[in-house]
Length: 252
Image (cartoon, rainbow, N blue to C red; front, top):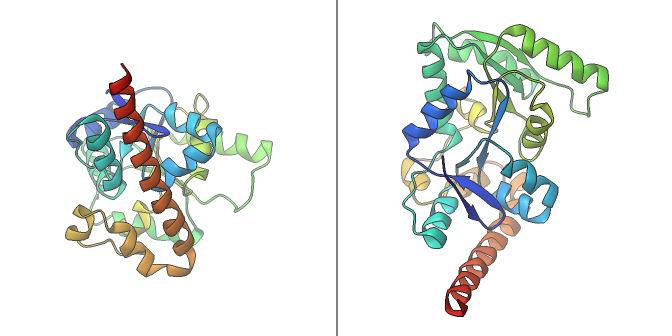
């Protein structure tokens, strides 16, 4: 799938169905990872070149947020569908159930992990959950990391859903490439939404690119600084990129 640069990250393009198909295909490959990108991830990558490299080395980088879809249209004149983690997760679980692909959940709190099987069983009765693990909220030792690798590989999982939040989950997946024999995908907040721990914005807010505002209303103290600074910086960088691209066209 072709990637196009939007400021600091290269975003994969294609239909929503293309992404689902490719992600299922990747479950049969040795070791890959996918980043589900939004404005927060893009700005983090802009501020940190090492993190930018991690995102750009991913097999796929999906346009999770509507602002990235608009960025692709503004900079590359591409009409791209949004490929949101909250849509991908249930669809990938459905495909995994259909094709008997074992899945693993890595990350999240103990409380979240304890609810996953109960929440998913009625919707996906034949889904093979190879394992679930909530790591400690601290860097793992070398021995603990090796134990995690052996635990996941030993489970037979072919898709690993990583729930550590950005940028931690992307850094973890990058460090595990070539070690964990599965397709890893960072789903972040999509999992708590799916199992009912958080609400998702109404459809009209999703389409209008206001899902961030809905989340802000849910967690104002935690998210106010991130969204105020991040969204403003994104708009500035996007306009700057558009202006520079126009100048390059005039020069050449």
